[in-house]
Length: 70
Image (cartoon, rainbow, N blue to C red; front, side, top):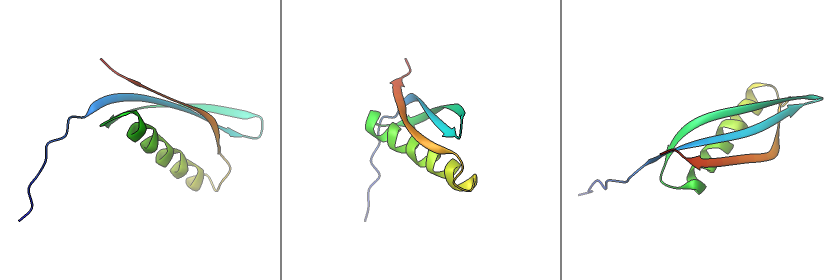
């Protein structure tokens, strides 16, 4: 028998920048996550999806940030 465990999630505002040639775009999301590491991992998955959907035109930069919302 399995039991469910309750986990406290915080709202994290994550931002990242993607580039295509000379163009750059910032993406901003609110992600419910248990910690900053998980929020950033979620943001990376979203960025990977954008890259895939664009035919690998939009490339991820190293500009990632996350902050917890109060």
